[in-house]
Image 1 (cartoon, rainbow, N blue to C red):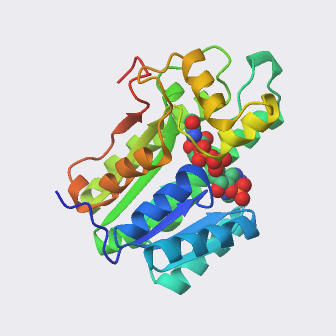
Image 2 (spheres, rainbow, N blue to C red; image 1 turned 45 degrees about the vertical axis):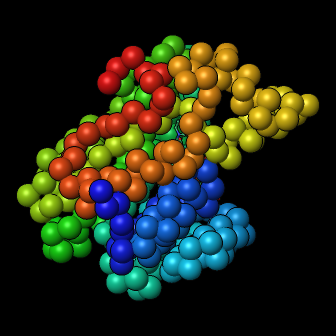
Length: 262
Ligand SMILES: NC(=O)c1ccc[n+]([C@@H]2O[C@H](COP(=O)([O-])OP(=O)(O)OC[C@H]3O[C@@H](n4cnc5c(N)ncnc54)[C@H](OP(=O)(O)O)[C@@H]3O)[C@@H](O)[C@H]2O)c1
C-alpha cells in the first residue's frame, strides 16, 4: 500500500502543536508541501523549522486565528500565493471546552461554535472551488467521539462536534461528483500539548508519563494508554493519500476502542 503524498499541498489548521504538528510532520515525510496555520507566531515558526529540518520538505507557517474571518481569508490567500493551491485541508484547530449545561454562557457557546464549526465552514468554502476544478481534493475534519456519544457535561464541545459530523456528511455528498473526499476523525484521548498544559494546571507535582498513566487508569482506556499523536497522524495520512480513495463521508474513531458507538 502506498500512502505517499508527493507534491500535494496540504493546509493544516492548529498545525503548530499536538495532533496538527504530528500531521504536518507525517504529511511532509510522505512528500507533501505543507502549510501550517496557528496563532502564536513564535511557536509556529519553531515547528515549521523543526519539520523542515526533519523532512527537508517545503513547510511554511501562516499566523492566524481561525475564529477571525479576515485573518483566515488573508492566510488562505498567502497559501495560494506561496503554493498555488490547496489539495488537502485539515480542519484541526481547537481547544477543549466542556462544562455542566447550566454553566455555559451564550458567549461560551458562540466561542466554541466559531472555533470548531465556523472555522471549518469558512475554510471549506475557500478550499472547495479549487479542489472541484482540479477534480482532486481531501478534507479531513478533526472531531471527537462525544460527537457520536455525548456524555453529561460534554457540551458545548460535543454539540459543536456533532454539527461537524453533519457538515462532513453534507460536504462528502456534494464533493463526491468532483472527486473531493471528506471525512471526519473522531478523537479519543491522544497525547498532545493540551495534556501537558492540563498536567501543569491540575497536577504540577506529577511527571508527565505518570500523569498520562493516571489519566488512562481513571478513564479506563481500553488499551491502557492514550494514543500518540503519530498514531492519529497515520490515519490522517492514509485518508489524505490515494490509498484512501474510496472512503468519504466517514467519521473514524481514533480512540483505541473507547467509544461505544462505531
Ligand atoms: N488530544 C486529544 O486528546 C483530543 C481530544 C478530543 C479532541 N481533540 C481535538 O483535536 C484537535 C487538536 O487538539 P490537540 O490536542 O492537538 O491540541 P493542542 O495540543 O492544544 O494544539 C492545538 C493547536 O491548535 C492551535 N489553535 C488553537 N486555537 C486556535 C485558533 N483559534 N486559531 C488557530 N489555531 C489555533 C494551537 O496553536 P495556537 O495556540 O498558537 O493558536 C495549536 O497549534 C483540536 O480540535 C481538539 O479539540 C483532541
